[in-house]
Length: 631
Image (cartoon, rainbow, N blue to C red; front, side, top):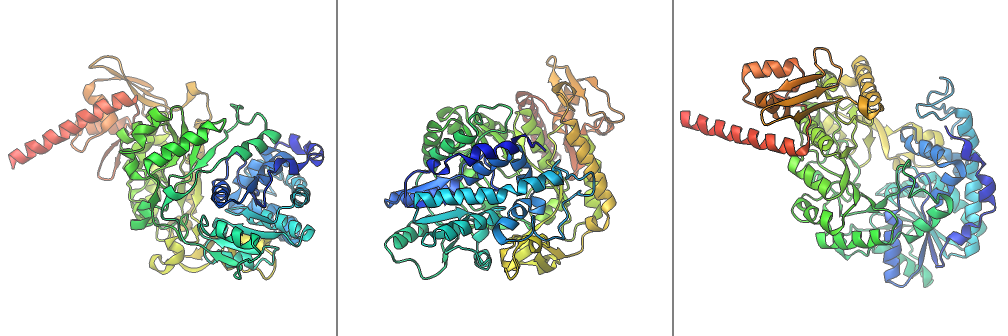
């Protein structure tokens, strides 16, 4: 933990927060613990919608202020500890008057193990940081009230509800006439009723996509005719091209006040512009993944036209000091491979984009994405067992997941992925397959971790649990430890637990084995570049290739020379390999026997991979033609 920045309060105590705010009748607040490195698409999109009807809305990044108050490294460590909802616990005293971090029974993970958590947050220092929550809320509330906004609202998704309550309670206490409101993913569906049960100083709650209802609400309130219903339900926006383009100028103005070198600091994780090209999930419309609840009640897929995306991105990068773009899409529109992707690299060069994808991408599509400026993808791999993936309804196989990892490594594209366990009805052999496979993949980008499945609201496991043998669905017990008495926890909660049969939960030894293997894999990738695990083929001549294998597996050689046929097997595998070729490749762990054929594991430059895949495809076609002739 880095406590060097805890001295920041002296600087912040004398800073005039109100000088950060632009004039307007309405203020939208971005509360902790959303990442301070991202712009808020939701707030600035609503700001733009209000602007179209002549209402000025200002945006305050209160999360940036807290990150400066406690130190951005400490802020980030609390933010990523979402398994314990630590960000919500952090504000339980400031929001609800409960003991620090909630219930007195609360024990921080690993508190008894050298008084640290797995993220190196020392319990005593975490307690010290928590005392800043009240200070943060009080100072911002005073500044907001001084500026005289008639309406003040906040966005709440993931770990932002307690901070929102802490802040709006204080604003309302100082200025009872100020109209307060909230919206966001934590208000979706019946969760809005859960927010209402908190007995907080919140006048109105928006549920759903509010681009139309929000400006209408502002006009009503400012004309002295507020809505009669506390919860304002909204319908999904079906025409994304009709939405205005957000502007993030205020974000960078406020970022500059507290972290003036954040955009330029190469050691940092970067500053990102958020942008959406679609909403919903085209795969989920057909076969929703069993554990996914991200779309809430808006799973119907909608996409922007490529022309609109190009125009928006040009505007955003022109007025911003960064070209990092993180798309908020659940999945990229598949039509974009023919329409948008070929245009991006030439019309808006030097982008660094993050995009969520389906994992069944071909090499050609991965190369096209990289040329377009897509440098990071999140493909939802989640498993390396085809049986387990089928159980999740992912619509991909383990061999396709491995192929994607190989392709992305070859084009220098980062893949953000993880492994999950604890699925209803899972089988022991699915994890035995995974454990046997993991050492072979050490040369590819590792997963971020190995996590137990969480049953989320809006997922098929939650909505139709009986179909999967899931019973007794109940809120994660963590919620009860930091929410106030009489709040409707079942309606507030997003994460749930349940009763169901699961081999992985009944055979924890293999789960521990997999966790150790994942940790070994991650550790290997913290080495210097010269010591990273490698399994790569390079061309020396038309007929001679060299294979470098630094995975450190028993029975493998670090350097060996290959002929064309051997290189073809290493890079393409084959359904029709000769027995001698199979034995040679298996012995050297260059292929994995999976999904009924031999899956190649080696990497190469994308040009070489393409060349060999074309040859392999031709050989397969010739084999099929020859088989037809014999018939």
